[in-house]
Length: 81
Image (cartoon, rainbow, N blue to C red; front, side, top):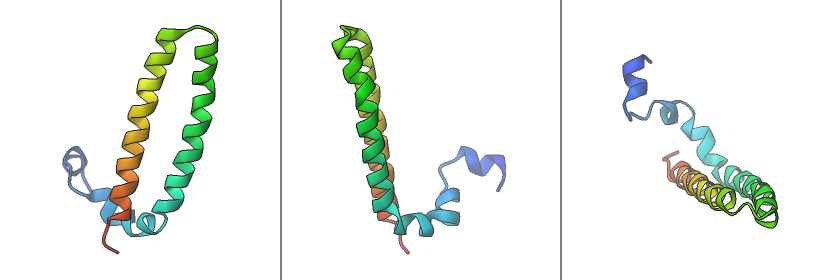
């Protein structure tokens, strides 16, 4: 594996450890759900503190990370074993 392979979107990582991770995709998804729930607590603190701009930015970032984690877990689950 060289730097050129890492800069492209060739499935270097999934070829190496994808089979193992595809079996644990549902567990990874549940861990992501728990972490996402725990990340909502400080966001609600911002809302109660009347830090509306921080809350809106934090919520948008949280939704983006949550969406990327969902896409990654779906891709892992769809890998051929």
